[in-house]
Length: 312
Image (cartoon, rainbow, N blue to C red; front, side, top):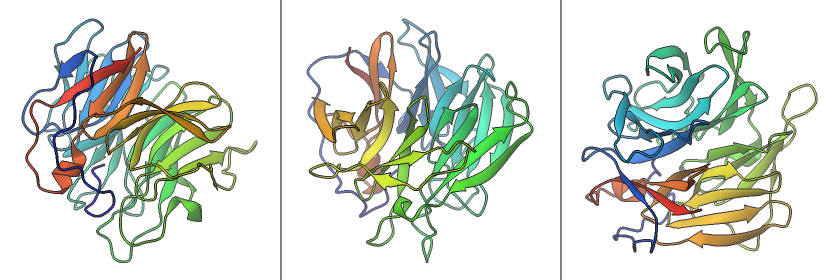
């Protein structure tokens, strides 16, 4: 989701080009890439916050193919490949916050919609991750609502683990740490799973990185902030590297490698154009340059919109 005005200091200037890396060009003048996911074969799926399209790049190709056309969703936030159900999960969003936010599943082969679930209680669908066969969704909360609702984590469980249909979407956690103080703004956004028993989520407004354990019965344990010497600057998309390390993009232009065990971070790349998400494949790390701060500030887009491979 685009940062609401005032949540993060907008850059407002063209970013310095990263010195190396392959670039994939996205179509049109309103794409504003929000999220990116990869299939096991390396196919990339990129969502558009404004046009509502989802495009894909097949392995070795620099040509964007329309996977989901722009007339299906108003906008699209987080995306995640689900090889077991053979679908791409996607957050169907409305950047104006007028229409209901949805969690939808699209057939990985054809792009046809296979399932659609409304986020309850006027919640948002910001980003998502698969964990233990379920889909976990961050609810960043509507920054235009007065009073602002608490941020939450939702969980979709399907009776048949091989199908996207027949699921139940319920609130998994509304931990007070999900919603930071200081007025309206988007809250928890990026989300990742360590492969065992812990979810991590970034708060784009407060700059926090939080961990939430999954109890043996599947319920949520209390959230905890991972302490760093300083908080992050507009942390958005995150992806796990291993049990103790993840990669994160900051909207202000950096790609970081973060160690959640030691509370340390290393800058991998700087000068990215307001990056929103990343994914790692056998070809490297791919970052969407979303320009969402400029969008929120009413500034013109810097064309073309791009996905950039920034490191090996």
